[in-house]
Image (cartoon, rainbow, N blue to C red):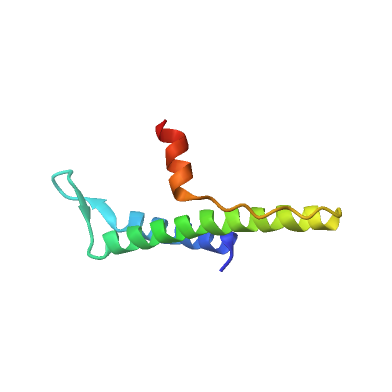
Length: 88
């Protein structure tokens, strides 16, 4: 699945979860069985949509640079150096 497909699935699952929440006779909100499962799946797909969009953007940036004759250098981050920079 790509970012758009994950986003669409997240919307569908969130709508389905929302459809299973209703008010009781006393006015309290009640959820049918499985609503938390649907909400969790919606969250997973929303996260995957963001991840895929970020990966697509990085890939697009590299391809655009390459098409213009520029090779972007791959950056690696040393976790210890990263932490030290913010802890000092």
